[in-house]
Length: 429
Image (cartoon, rainbow, N blue to C red; front, side):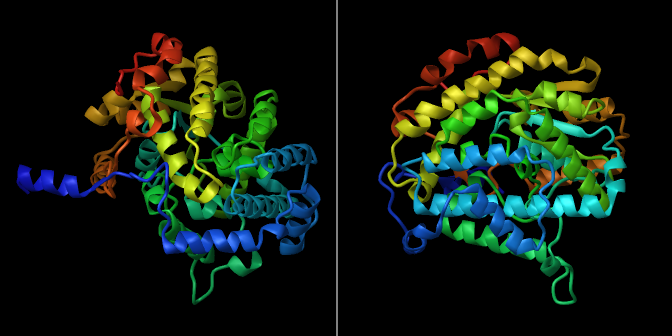
C-alpha cells in the first residue's frame, strides 16, 4: 500500500465523537433506556434480595466466609446514593451483583466437593499492573499468545464455574462462550465506540478484577457508577483477604482447565502492591508506566461517551471531579510501595519504549520469569502483534480542551511526584 493510500485508510479510521455533551441517541439506545425505565421499580439494592436471587438461580446456599456481606452492603448503599445513575446503570449493576453472588456460590460449592483444589499451587505467575491505557491490555494479550501460559478470557472471567445449563452439548461446545458473545454483540450495538475503547469480546483476555469482585471488593464499581462511599471504604481496608480470594479463584480455574502458569493483570494492583506481593511472592511483576494524562484523557472520554446510557444527565464535572484525583491516589500508592517488590522479580515498562520496540522488553520479561523464549514462541508473539496492532478498529479522537475545557498541563500538575520517581515521557500537552 502506498503512503498516500495508508494515510487515506487512516483518515477513514478516525472516530471523532462530537456529541459527548449533548448526545444524539440512536433508536436502539432509546429502546434500551425506555425498557430499563419500565423495569426500574423491580431493582432493589438490598443484600438480602441480591443473595436470595443468587440462591434461587443456583440452588446453592453456602457463600463461604461471611465477611463479604459487609462489603456488599456498602456496594448497595453507595450505588443507591448515586442520584445521577440511569435506570440502565442500576439494572446492569443489580444483575452484575447477582451474577457475582451466584459465582461465589459455585466457587464455594466446587471447593467443598473437591477440597484438594486448595492445595493447587499458583506457581510463579506473571502479573501485569499499570494505569489503564498504559499498554497493560496489549501486553497481557501478547503474553497470552504464548500457549504455555494460562490466561483469563472474558467468557471464563464472568462465569468461572459452569452452571448446569452451561455444560458443553453437541449443539454448543461452550455455552459460556456463547452467552458472552451475545452480551458482546449487544454492547456493540448499543455503544459501538465503547466497544472500540474497551473490548469485551468472549476471547478477549480479561483483567482479574472480575475474580476479585466475587469477593465484593476491588475498585470495579467505581468504573460503573459514582460511588465515593465505596472508594473510601475500599481504600481504608486491607485487601489481603480479597487477594487471597483471587488466588482461590485461580486455583478453581486451574482445577477445571489447567495448567497453572498464569499471566494476569489489573491496573488496581498498582495501589495494592503489598497485598499483591504477599499473595503471590514468587511472581514476576511487570509494571507499565505512561504519562497519566494520556490515561485520564481516555477515561474522561470513555466515561462521558457511556454517560448517554449510564447517567441521567451528562455533566463533564462528574468525571473531572473524580478521576484525576483517583489516579493520583493510585499512583501515590504505587510510588510509596514500589520497592516492596523484589528487584530481581520486577520490571518497569515504559510506554514510549514499548511502542518503539517491544522485543527487548518481552525478552527481559521472559528472562526474569525464567521461561525460554524460543524462535517459535517469538514468531507467535510477532504474529499476535501484527494481528492486534493499536487502532485496528479505529482511532478515537481525544480532545481535552474541546471536550473538557482543560489542558494536559492542567491535569499533569498534581503528578510531579510520579515523574520524579519514574522516567515517564510527557505525551499530552
